[in-house]
Amino acid sequence: MSPFTVRLTFHGDLTFFLKSKAHVIERTLSEKTSVKDVIEAVGVPHTEIDLIVADGEPLDFSFQIEGAVDLDVYPFEQTPNAFPEKRLQARAIARFIADGHLGKLVRDFRLLGFDVLYDCDAQDRQLIDQLKIDNGRALLTRDRRLLMHSVVEHGYYLRSQDPLEQTIEVLLRFDLFRLIDPFTRCLRCNAGLEKAEKNSVIEKLEPLTKIYYEQFRRCTGCGQIYWAGSHFSKLQRRLEKIRECCS
Image (cartoon, rainbow, N blue to C red; front, side, top):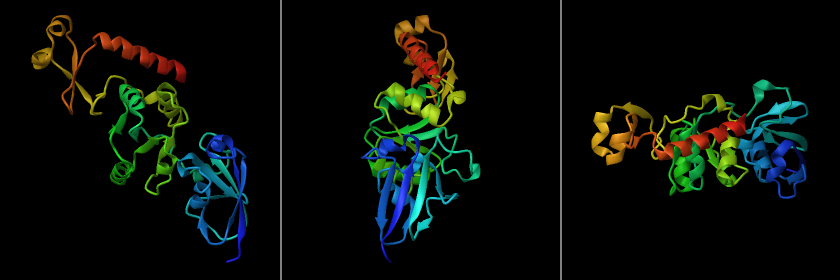
C-alpha cells in the first residue's frame, strides 16, 4: 500500500493532550489503521472523544482508514449539534473505579454517595481486570495510556491535580449533580450505610459518644459506625463547597 496522509483537526480542549498544542496534526500511514489507533497515536485517549467526522459523515472508533482523509475530532462538551445518535461517549455514568493516586477524590465521591471502587495499591492490570468484570464503570485516572486500553469503554482523564477541582470535573462531565446523596456510603469500603439503633452499636462506642449521640449509621460492608460527631461539620463544609462550585 502506498503511503497516505491523515489530517486530524482536534477541537475544544483536546489540544490539552497534544505535545505541540497545535490543533491540526498530519500523520503519514502505509497500512490500513483504525480511527482509534490513529487518534491515540498522537496522545488523545478515545475516552475523551465524543464525535469523529470525515467528509460530513460520523465514524466510530473501529472504522478502518485506507487512504487520505481529513478527520474532525470533537471532545465531549464541545460537539456540534449534528449526529446526536452517533456520539461515542456515555452521558450519565454514576459508578466508577479510580486508580491508586486519587484517594482524596474517592473520599469526596463516596461522601457524595457515589459508588467508587478503589485500592491504593492496585496495579494497572488489576484495574483492567475489574473493568472486564464490570464494564459499566468509568475509569478515573491521570494515566492516559491506561485510558487507551481496549477494555476501557468509559473513562475520564482528570485535568487538575487538586482534589476539589477533580471532584467538580467528574460531577460536570457525567452530569451527576442531581444524583448527589450525601452520607449514604462508607468512606472506607464503599458499601452502603444503614440506620442503626443505638443499643445495637453501643458496645462499639467510646464513652462520650454513648452519652452525647443518639443517631447512628452502620456500614453494611465493613461494619464501621458513623455519627454526627466533630468530624461531621468538616464533612458538611466540604459538601457545601462542592455544591457551591457546581452551582
